[in-house]
Length: 91
Image (cartoon, rainbow, N blue to C red; front, side):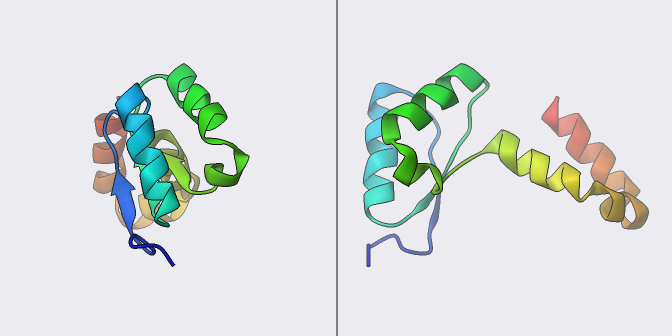
């Protein structure tokens, strides 16, 4: 068991050189990591560098939005204003 088991860490700059080291350290201690990045290229490079065994612990904000949008039918039916606000925030 790691010190960060069950923790979700948001690491801004996680695709940079120093950030990658922080991402690795969090993985080693058991955290799930969210790395915000506007660059798909940078995320893909990070995924390559950290190795396949850690990719399950890495989540990007784009993936989170995709999961939310996947379930949007129910949300739009119940909370139409919330969906509009979320879509505005994404762009």
